[in-house]
Length: 318
Image (cartoon, rainbow, N blue to C red; front, side, top):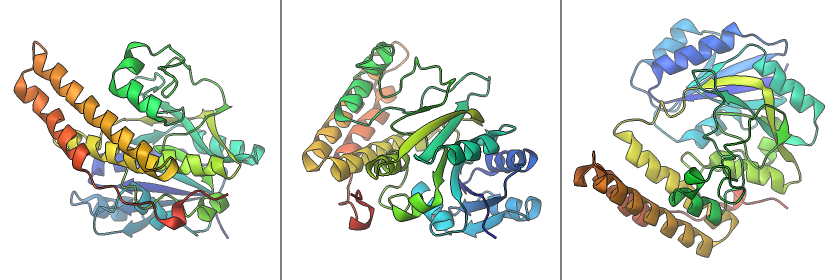
């Protein structure tokens, strides 16, 4: 019998985070039937052994190498049994009733193709640093020039993050965060899942865009609460390369949905943004050339990043 929900947690060297995430999932059980799958992207920190020893009820898929977030989720979800699929970051903690709230909302709203839950900071405050609005060249420009941060309440500059929106009520939004994203299984499968050309960071934006392109909506479910330890899996020396991967994914997104000219424009904006950040850090009282060098690297790597053409199977339907 197929479960109501198939949950996929992707992990890459996040042993402690993964353990806490799975523990919260098991502890806060659902009245619906739920299957949990962990996809390991080639971890070397004992994550696989921990899952086998502590969570025998959890299905484990070992990919043997870091294939990226979207591909790893596809490996566990595409054409698998379940009415709904839930993509969940390993750095999340499930609150009581959150899983039921997501499923109930999807059951009650057949026009929802996907939905996100409420992401909470460890101190209990609402997390507002994930994108809600449409990804456009203007939104990238406002972000890279700090205008979105300087004027967060502006409808022009602040629309992408909508940091003043209290996130305390259900609504429809252009995109939901891939840290906690539920989708109808038939819709996910129809669209071919996440675009495998995106390694990480814009796969949720792209999927939500394609869901809307087939006439469905993306929702926000305020009663489905998840603590999100934002950025815990991409800190330290990984950070500059993660920024570059974020930029590369955006360039790909624009190439796919708006064409090569828009892709080139987005690349130029993000290179300029990295140079601006390098200058600010270099000139800062506690900075200096060394402080700005990371962003010089980001600018160079972004300028030279290879962006493949979109595979025909993942282009927009309809």
